[in-house]
Length: 354
Image: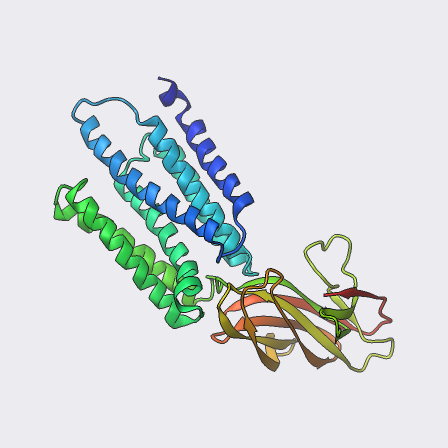
């Protein structure tokens, strides 16, 4: 009776607890502790999906007890997986990765709210489970197997996730589905749909280029490498309300206007053992054409393992107008971006060590 009355609140609470716990715990994609936790979540969630659906079948045969504890553990695992992956994707420097998982969490919450007593529904569980499995593979495979990023690595990650879910569906086939082809067909269609949608989002550049992530990025008046390590940078401080920016959205080039040399400095995190090249793409907005024009592209290699990320910068002569510097992978996937307006005016400069 208690479960039926407070099912919505308890279920959402378990999801929220799992989500909050891993927001605090999640650190970096090559952390062995984090990955052990994520793998345990996946294993426990997979086992619970089988157990809960077996119980659901028995409940229809007069076993009426509600598996409250098992349902709460499943929701906790889903919440923990979602929050940990949200942190890892969200650090990639784009809002798209965060929006993707926030949307997924909305589905989880509303699924729990409107499918009352239906968290044991096989198709709903498998859809959520495979979504989380696929997003994890996209991080873990380049981090621990290929030590690289790119389209081929992403495709390989998807293939590995399909292999894992195929083994899971095979186990479901002989236990829950009781060797009925119709049930297997239904869940397989769901898996294939999620796989195709996820790949579509990747090729539309919605999926951020995990496991790479932006630590910081800004546009500076000067960057000087110091002999003792680090960089001495001169910059205009951002507005007090722009707490998310390292440098101002205004780049002043002197009262007479003309041109000046700007420095785009970025720090990109990569997991230990991962070596790749990143690109700084300088773009100026053309108001006549109504689009951004590439003015320069500079590449340099980065190596993984540093908590503060791999640091580097590029230079570009700028004139008054709207500018931005994109940090991208070789395939053009956006890691981070800094946008700024170049204006005539006397800059008020500060210094910092990067």
